Image 1 (spheres, one colour):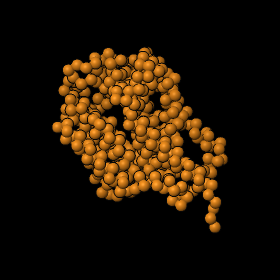
Image 2: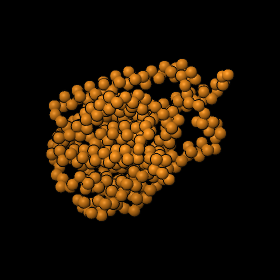
Image 3: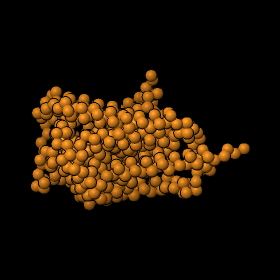
Image 4: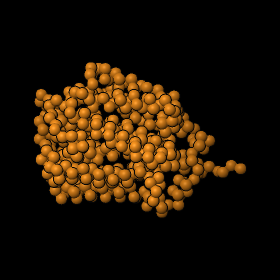
Length: 389
C-alpha cells in the first residue's frame, strides 16, 4: 500500500499515539529515569481496555453505515449547495465569511497581546508568570483564534494568512504552555493535509518540525520553572514525562472513584482538575509559597479517578464515536468541518498525556458535532429535493 493512499489522520491515529506514548514510558522505566519504576499489569490492562473501547466507538458508525442503504445514498449523493440549502442555513454560513473570520483572528491576536502586556513579562521564561498566564483574556483569545485561523485556511487559503498563523503561534507559544502551541501547530497541519495534496516528503518534514518544536517548547518551559531542578536532556525529558504520567495513572487505578466526579465538575467550572490530581493522588499540598503543580494522568486517568473503570470505558467509546461521526462528515463536506475535525482530533491526541480536563476542548467538540448535525439536515433536505430538468 502506498503511503499517499493511507489516511494518516483518521480517528485510528489515536491508537498509534497511545502505543507510542506507552513505548516512551517504557523507555523511561527501562532507563530508570529519576528512579521511575514499571507500572502494574492491572494498569496496562486498563490502557488496553480503554483503547479497545475507543476502537469500538470508532467502528460502530461504520457498521451502521454499511447496513443502511439510506445513509449510503445520503453520503454518496451530491454535496449541499446554496440553492439546495435552507435559507436559515445559508444565513448561518455568514459566520464563515472570510471577512468575519479574519476579524475574529485579529481580535484574538489583540486579546492575547493585551494579555501578555498585562503580565509584564515573557511567561515561557518564568514559572511564576507562566502560572498566571492563563487568564480569561487568554481563554477567550485561544477559544476563538484556533477555529477562526484553521477555518480561514480551509476555506480561503491565501498566502499572507500564513503570517497571521505565525504571529498567533508565537504569541501563544511564549505563554509557556506546550499544549496550546502544539494544538495550533497540529490542527493547522491536519487542515493542510486534507485541503492540499501534500507530498510525502513535505508531510514527513512537517511532522519532524512539529516534533522538534514540541520537544523544545517543553524543555524550555520546564527549565524556566525556578522551584524545580532538571538534569535530563530534551529527549530524556519527553520519555520521563510519559513515564511519570503513566505512573500517576497507575496510582489512580488503585484508588478508582476517589474524587467522585469532582474532576469532571471542575472541568466545566473555574476549578483546576490537574492540580486536584496532584493533591489527591500524589499528596501535594494546597497553597504554599510556590504555585500549585498541574499533574497529567493520561486520557484514561480523570474518568477512573472520578468514577472507575466503566466511566473510562464509556468515555473512550463516546470519544471514538464522536470523532468517527465528524470525520465522516468532513470527508463529505470539507471546508469548515475539516478544520473543526482537525481541532478536536488534535486535542484528543494531546489528551493522551494531559487527560480530558479542558473545558475549551469540550466547546470545540460541541461546535464540531453541532456543525455535523446541521450539515446532515441539509444533506437530507438535498436528497428530498426533486431533480430539475
